Length: 106
Image 1 (cartoon, rainbow, N blue to C red):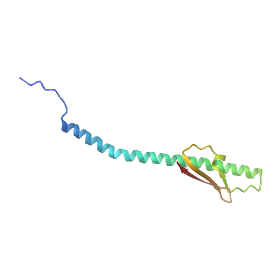
Image 2: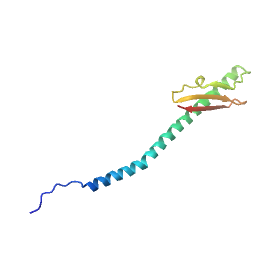
Image 3: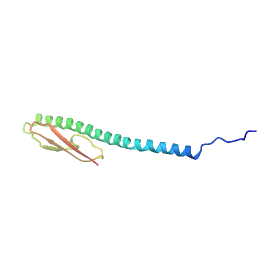
């Protein structure tokens, strides 16, 4: 007569599964963190490009109105609405009116 045995996982099998999951997490977490960091950096670059474009347009339009307009810097809030992710932002112009934006993340 056969014994009526319940099928179940052994402790070794459960430990093996836990070890495999731990190894996967050890590999995956740094990749996820790098992706988040990269995404934030690209977001800041995109914001900076938008601000540069708006700042240069603002500079050119101000210069068209006032031929003597020769600003060296303006506040970022004059050309773009920023969210609270940036602790500081500055715009400076060279002699040709080309803008340089510096963003600092919070």
